Image (cartoon, rainbow, N blue to C red; front, side, top):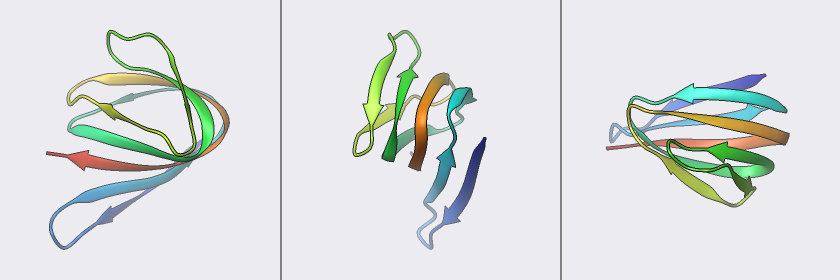
Length: 84
């Protein structure tokens, strides 16, 4: 239901490019993440926050060492950057 590819850059940065099919998901983080939604429609629940609607062209940050929930309504393409 979720497919991703990791891209490593010469400067040591790492990004994940992927696609998520409709469904409910929960992910855990080690590092702080910037999730850029390239296309699709979803809702996100970050720690200690209410559900929030996100569409293609929007982004959100996820704290390190936490978890977040997603409800994917349409096929969603994303780019995840791991922040220091």
